[in-house]
Image 1 (cartoon, protein in one colour):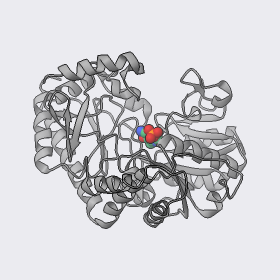
Image 2 (cartoon, protein in one colour; image 1 turned 120 degrees about the horizontal axis):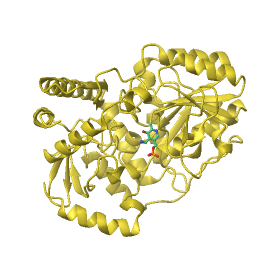
Image 3 (cartoon, helix red, strand yellow; image 1 turned 135 degrees about the horizontal axis):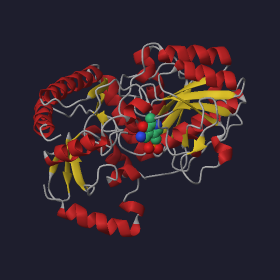
Image 4 (cartoon, protein in one colour; image 1 turned 180 degrees about the vertical axis):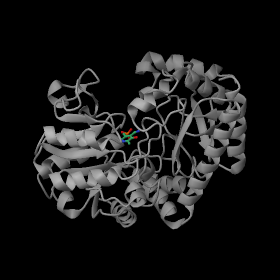
Length: 428
Ligand code: PMP
């Protein structure tokens, strides 16, 4: 493949944008090489500035669950744009998407729209603190909840000590209120609660983790978290930015029959426009301004174009009773094909999958948390990434990312991908 124009555009971008990108993972730092500059995309395919075509397994990191430039979404945005792009005043469409989201997702009465997953999680934590009148939060190593200060924290020296900032600019003061637990380790969570009695406002978790590759919860882990939260007056926040409107209509809450207190959304709910949201039962949501004292706001929140895209997307997902099954079947097919190809060539690996989230880890042992995810062979991953790219398959340029399967993928696309894995696994 020829990337001449992408390379030139990247060099130009680097002069005026830090690292040439507006979000770090796009820069290919983890895998080396030059990022591909996208010209356009349709259905399951991306077309770059050099005229190369790729089957897309990132799909804007999740939102394009029905494929790129999905016609009902495009039409809704175009029609709305003709009538004005922002008012900073209430519009009917905000209520329409809110009503639909509340009808699809269990255990929520009200939802507030924001502009990103980061904002959704950051606001959810503030709301939990305001509601419980406690300060500390528990998050899990390897889970990502956006780039707000409270989440950019790494484990301290011992399991029950405070976290420490993992980015300059995050203060020790902030870090001391975030406690880190290991994913899928309920004993670890119990120790933290014990060591910080009556101080923990909430536990925030990706109910199926997608930011250390795909790591599903082990049986009963979420149920045990729910019980712990009930016992200790802690709110359980499900960060469903990835899983919401992807694993099922009602997301992971529906899939695992676990009730969260606050749910965060992003990605699919905006149909590819910048949207996030957080939702909960009335008792909690009524604490938010202007009803209650917990402040949260946004000039562009509930933006008409974003709401039009999100509503068109949710309507499609709500009306197509088979879409989530179809996505899971396609992902299962891909899983089987990739596993066979890697096994044939004796490439050590573990594949994790849940619904339409899947990831390939280059280590034979089970991947259940951040430590086990980090054991994967990064050199093998880099070769795999570039090998696949050369075959016209675009997967995430980092070993810690999930592949997001889109319904636009045909079985021919999946077969083409599996054939590519067969070729590439010979050089791993
Ligand atoms: N939570 C999760 C689970 C995510 O995967 C992400 C983004 N990948 C975020 C929050 C942050 O969302 P955004 O990038 O829209 O701010």
